[in-house]
Length: 233
Image (cartoon, rainbow, N blue to C red):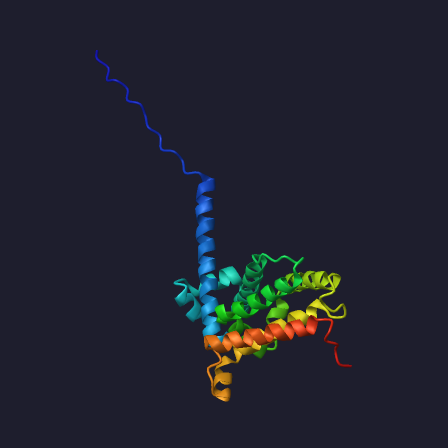
């Protein structure tokens, strides 16, 4: 009796649970990031009230329910948008190669960075304008908001301390005030560039006009921190 040779059995490998979970996690993260990117664009263009969930999900090529799944609500999404734009600015600032032992050059770098960042990221200014129209009622609910202002003020504090030690800067000025001065001048110019152009009868967004303004802001900041310029009382 001839017995047929037994063929070796081939077993299919079971899919790794870790791999499947990793793929799902990656896909979920991509969906979340896509919604967040779309929300930044929609809120910047239409404001909070006009930035509907439907517009965001359509731009993100997602579904309304995914916004509620990942962010809880439209407000929750908007709060994360605000946190994201602040974090991005902080991350960009952290990449600056500042040498605080050279306080004049370091302070100039900070001024250039802030003014250039506002111009390169108009959505940052627009979204903050939107939140200010709502009197900051969304950002106050953020658990991270305060984290994003402290690094910038801390850096300026280190620069000022170095300048004071070298006799270059006044000792009676706070990092907070210098930060607000730089932010205010850059923010106002960018947020009001269209109305200023109409009011002044010149294109304040033209490269030459921007360069002149940056030079003026630098001069203003250095006059404020310089010990030879005494504050009026």
